[in-house]
Amino acid sequence: MCLRVPIPGVDQENSEVPSGQSAQQHQTHLDSIFMLLEEKIVTFVKNELKKIQKVLNPDYPECLESQREEEDEDEEHKSSREAFLKITLHFLRRIKQYELADRLQSSKRISLKINLLD
Image (cartoon, rainbow, N blue to C red):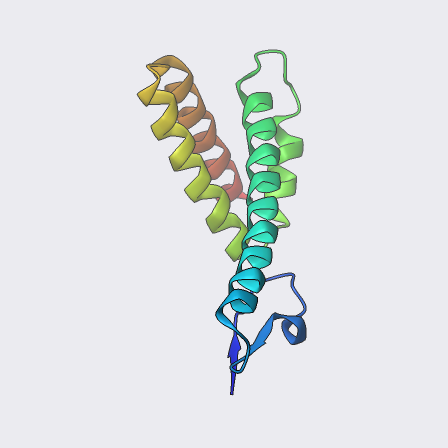
């Protein structure tokens, strides 16, 4: 009997833990999976924060370029980006950056409307 731990981008054959393994081996395997997961999440967050910073920069005229990138992504990635945007808006408001949060929310609404018209 094997325990499958499916993780996108990870070879599923290597993510199996035979049921005969010790608790220590299982914990080590789980630790390595979560290290990889943390790396993927941190990379995603950093990339998204860079995009958001560009959108909020008044000198950034390439808004349409980022919209084209968004059109090419799959639904799962788009859903992750939308969830991250909500988290970012929440944290901006928690640190009392209401104006930035409002500008970001407005720019994303405009972006969504443009994408719907295409």
